Image (tube, rainbow, N blue to C red):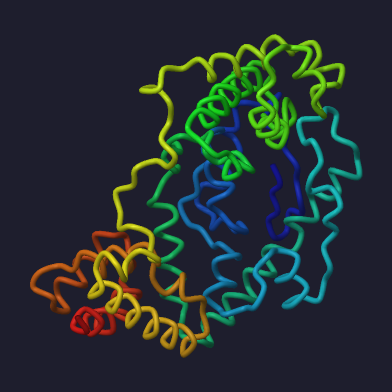
Length: 343
């Protein structure tokens, strides 16, 4: 955990041997926290009892300011003229003790965050977007931790290369076995068994442990010891009843894929086309990405199932119910209402 405060320098805290961070919480609870891509860090911080009361997200601020690249290194180089060292981003940070050069790398990540915050705040003020940013940061804090992903095994890299439900069932069983083992060891699942190895094993469909051991990755010493675990998982997936196999895709609660709209509801396709064109023009006018102007998913839902009556008030209410901030509602309400009248 990296902390920097004006006048006090940079500090690094390892929360593993120090699970009680109440003294840190009491010291920073009233301060504005400056984070880059805050939604990535806030859940982990909350696990050790650290939750900010005020927030400034430099990644989101860079998006609102219309910067072409919003990664931390790119924004720091663009606005402050420094080049950040990024050599250890893929390191195994469960290593203890952490090498000194890794600690230096970690400290540099926050060394200029306060200066970066001030530079971005000045740009947002000049562009008249300070209130937009305030609402966005408040929304991040109000959202809380994300809900657990449904069917997380479907996020396995390479899953789209599997052809049928039987293969999906085998992958799910293998993923579950890997996840259980990773939890017991307290290591990242990918360090137990790479995604690519799981997909390859499913595609090869080995019928014996010896055949599984012939595959790349599984030949290694660590996985030779675990061959029974991996082969047992593949066998369980292979022998599942048809009724228990996962569907090709998880049923969604939203509109169908956009490429099917023209056939299923041509009027909705016309509405969406008009909405997208108008939003793209509006986003360009305000120099920000269209996805930060309003959620694309919210726009699709609105165009697929319009509210009744189709007027500015019902559109605004639908946007608010979908999580849009007031600045987004004010900017897009009339444009989206006009799009609903196209068909």
